[in-house]
Structures are given as C-alpha cells and as structure tokens.
Amino acid sequence: MSHSSIPEKTNCSVISDWRPEDPEFWQQRGHRVASRNLWISVPCLLLAFCVWMLFSAVAVNLNKVGFQLTTDQLFM
Image (cartoon, rainbow, N blue to C red; front, top):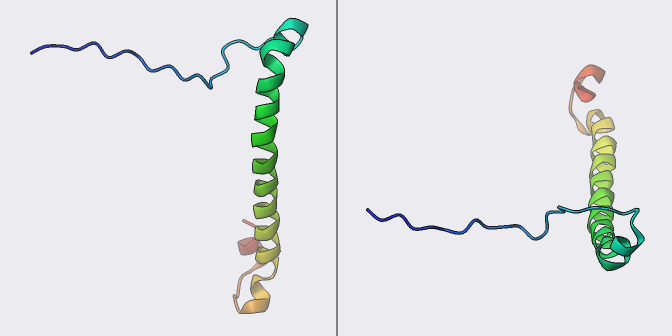
C-alpha cells in the first residue's frame, strides 16, 4: 500500500498578519482587506437586522391572524 503525500490546502482569505496601526502595512494590504470586509459585512448585517425586525413584527401580530398564543408563548 503506497501513501501519497497530499499538500495541505492553505486558505488565502484567512488573515494571518494584521497590523492596522502600521502605516506601511495599511497602505500595502490593510486598507484593501478592511474595505473587503466592510463590503461583505455591512449588507449581511443589514439583512440580519431586516429578518429580525420582520420576525418581531410577525410575532406581535400572530394572535390577530388566528393563533391563540399567550404572551409568554409569543416571546419565548
């Protein structure tokens, strides 16, 4: 039985070096990484907030559409 050596996969999107206070690092890599993270995280957080607000509005009005739930059951 032969054993093959499979190289370990490295993920290039993992932040291994982060020095935002270093001006040289910030100009070379930091600004690009921070901008990418903001462009990804802001829409995700907005979507999460919208889902949370929608669920809150629906939960409050469940009794008005025919469900017989106590206040404790609505807000577990």
